[in-house]
Image 1 (cartoon, rainbow, N blue to C red):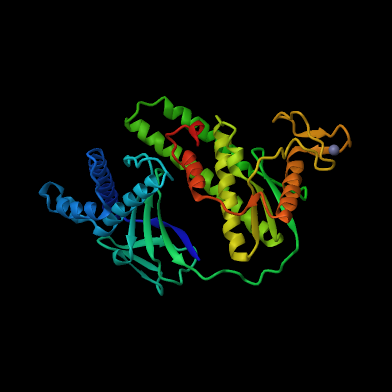
Image 2: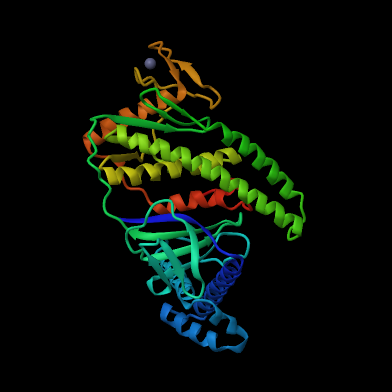
Length: 398
Ligand SMILES: [Zn+2]
């Protein structure tokens, strides 16, 4: 299976300058060719990938653009490929029309294919074309040759290197447990299991979220484009990243334990939860982490031979009594506990929901319909995007 492993990178000052130049050139090539393709499109012509590639060769000979030759040609060529993919996705109506890449707004990245880097497996050292050896924090040994290597600079100023690797299936003889579980992901808790276990949100996240809210208020008071704005923007980005790191850490622990303990895992389809418009930062962050949690569980489950089943149809998981099936008319979000009128069972809102997810999952998968283990990655990307950019309002999340 193909996996992407990410490591933190520590470029020297000179390398950071070179990378900034590379990112800039990639952006210039991407935006320039996007403009050219758009112009051709408007004149009823078609500019293909090969066409942009030829144009790039011409551009490099332009004395005013001579700086394009200072950086490795591999990431520039990859930018054209990325643009091509963006157009293919657009024509297949999978995504919107490609947009220009903005400086300082998003992550900068440069992708190197095999002819643009060298990875020494013995010393675990990465050498990039025209840059030299880039210092990495290799947290686990890379035993295969990466097919591509991407250097990314986050708005917080951190650098990462991600490698695409073909790794062997990790199925280390997992003992089947014969157990199934329903999970309800939520805002007040990280997750609630149908067994009645609750996994709380790590406490430091709430503190960090409060700091983030304050930092963001301060950012809105600064003059756009000013030095103070930029400094504050960086602070906001750093907080976003710390929150994401802490969340990811707890989600890794959760997903690992779930995959170890259960043979079948039932989760609710995120898409349907998203129907509720959210206007709160905490909510948007929580939604994004649910997406991350589900994909982590899926990745680990695939390797271990555990099945993850997404319940892709809407059902009133919170409002229905898991003991007798009675359906409440309404249940406001603030109500954490309720008692079922006919059978008198007292429910914890989330545990009840998790039990319903398990029950529905088991019934429907026994019948063999209505559930699917397939999840489109497009949706995930869209959700994550809404929180990764500190400049955009989470309320506009798709
Ligand atoms: Zn009941």
